[in-house]
Every structure is written in structure tokens, then in C-alpha cells.
Amino acid sequence: NGEGALAVFRYGPFGPYLGHRHFARLERSCERLGLPTPNRFALLDDLLAVGRPKEDHRVRLTICDDGDGKPMRWMEVSEIAPARPRPKCMVVEGQATALHGAKTTSYAFSRHALRLAKAAGADDAIVVAGSRLVEGATSSVWLVKDGRARRCVGAGALEGITAGRLLELAPALGIDAERVSGLSMEDMHAADEVWLTSSI
Image 1 (cartoon, helix red, strand yellow):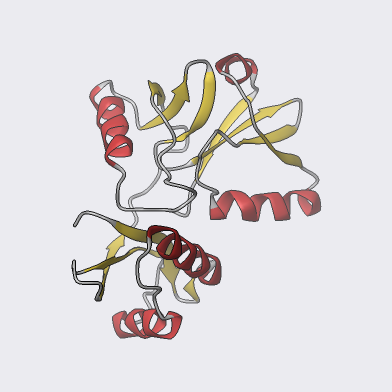
Image 2 (image 1 turned 90 degrees about the vertical axis):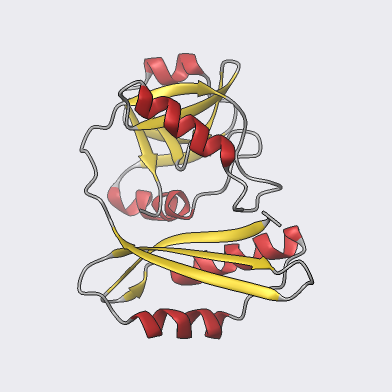
């Protein structure tokens, strides 16, 4: 029926990176969408059946129902393409991709934003609503100014798991980091650095 919840995370020799957080968000997403809540042990069994890769791989785990309320799940495991060290980004007008804070399979706008960016020769897209920053097409946006990192929390933006982990790690690394709502295009143009973070 086109409605589902999803989790995307790294999976390598040491298991799923921050897997407990991804599974918890997947459960919350299912609850918000009225989908059957997945059994974590069954999901781990699915991963174990794949085996432990020697290098990190990308896992896309999708949960939906068959239209009659019966749960369905499937998993895709693929290699991670090398990232460009300084990706080019294009600004795209739009809205938050999350639905009530749930990570869902309904991300047509994200795909559209990425297609526009690629067609223009960019690697990724940053979504704005008017002059306000919202999020990346598939990532969280950070602005760094004078050594202070601010994680953009646009209206309806998905809470990134990697972004949350960075907020936890920042103090020990001597980085002043915080979540900030209401960041603007003007803030982005004035920034010393712009970071995009995602699970991959």
C-alpha cells in the first residue's frame, strides 16, 4: 500500500552500528504509522543470516503490512560507495521529509531533491522552506561558525541518529555543539563550514 517504516544503518564486523537506536526509532515509526511493531530478535536473526561482512555495508530494513494487517519485512544489504570529501550541494525548496517524526518509505520529495541536485552537477541537496533551513535530502545539516557547531532542527525534520551521537561525543572532543531551530540561509552563507551527517 506504499506505506512503510524504514531504517538505514551501517553493518560490519562488529554488528550494526548504533543498531539499538535504529531499531528503537524503527519501532517508534511503526507505532506512529499504525504498523505492526517488529520483533528486534527477529531483525537480528535476519542480520545474522546475512553473515558478518569484513567491511561496513549499508543495510536498508523496511517494515510494512500486506494490506490485511499482517507484517512484512525485507532487508537489502549493499556496499557503501566512497564519499566525496567535499561534496557539492544544491539548495532545493521543499518541506521536511519525516511524517510526525517517523522515518518512512514515503520519501518521494527526497528522491526528487536528489535528482534535481544530480542534474545540476551537485552531489546532494539541502532542503529549505523560504529562507529557513530544514534538513538535507537524506541527512542532517550542521553549521559551524567560530568553532561552534549548530545542528539544524527544521520544523518536522527527522531526528538523525548520527547527529544525536555527535552531540554526545562533541564535549569530549572539545567541540561546542547544540541543536538549534530557526537557522536560515543567511546563517548558512555566513558559516565557516557546513556538515551533512547520516548513518552512511
